Picture 1 (spheres, rainbow, N blue to C red):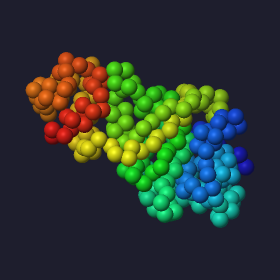
Picture 2: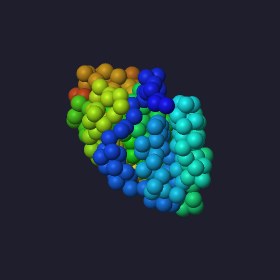
Picture 3: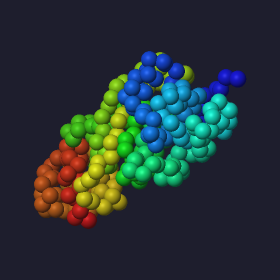
Picture 4: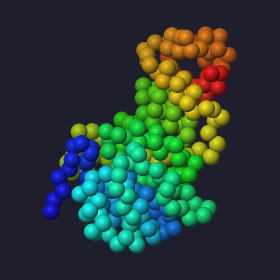
Length: 255
């Protein structure tokens, strides 16, 4: 029976075989990998991943799809975790000694940012992450200071990860086709993020980007003085998107 994509779950199923093979080559699954796939959907990517790994874990919210997955796959090869990836405790997935988790998935675009921040909490336990996301979101993630795309998402994720946009995926690769282009992003947790309290960095960056069109001195007024901006090497006349990660970290460390 054909599964109808559900809008409330943000379902767009990847069906293009060439794109799927490109993704698998990029991920390069190995037999001993501790791998988890978020949102396996109709299992197009799952079937290819399972050929490369000894055992695969998947997290799926849609109960009908959970039933299909459990029927199709041998539990010796696939463990299905039924539930919301936003609430799922990824640290519970068993990982062999000396190894780290590999996380992959075609993420529902309606929850991509909160899910990325949820996963950031377990970054020290992760080897790498490969996700398909809306192209615009990936461009924001990997953006450089001084570009329009550089913002809160860029700073917070670049503090924790090395990230690369691997390639673009057209809407025609999906059923139903989304209204936007997609992209594959690779995220590798940094062994030593710059020393900083995450909450203070979050507060600083949120304040700085609350009024993007204003200069940073006005954006952070009431939180930091002009003298403090100059102290950490920030020109108070710059706009928030022109200031790099290191300067935001230095500012957060003044809080």
